[in-house]
Amino acid sequence: MQQLLQQAQQMQQQLMDAQQELADSEVTGQAGNGLVTVVLTGDGSVKSLAIDPSVVDPSDVETLQDLVIGAFEDAHRALSELATRTMGPLAGGLSSGLGLPGF
Image (cartoon, rainbow, N blue to C red; front, side, top):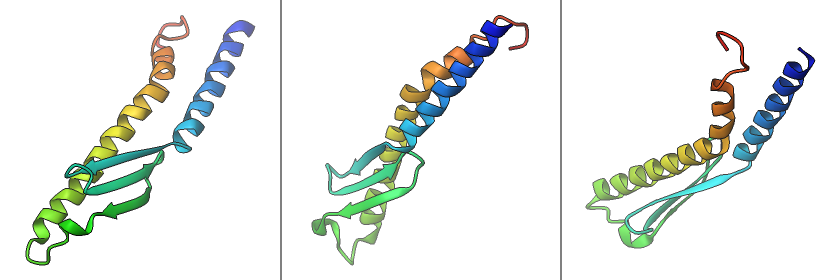
């Protein structure tokens, strides 16, 4: 039972470390070959948004809107992949269980 408790504590610490690593990370998403770029922090907050002046056309706002949405979607995809890489091994360890029924 002591060994099981130690394993659980180790997994909890690894999970906390992975969560902190993810929170400290940043991902970048872009659209239009880099004309619009979004940087998100690991918790999904927007750190920056950059728009190339060449895509700012008052008569075609829809294209700019589409590019901004595309950059955000790309950044969220990158964040999801990062979370899977960072947390995935730990989630797998949890799902493999502790050798007890129902865990």
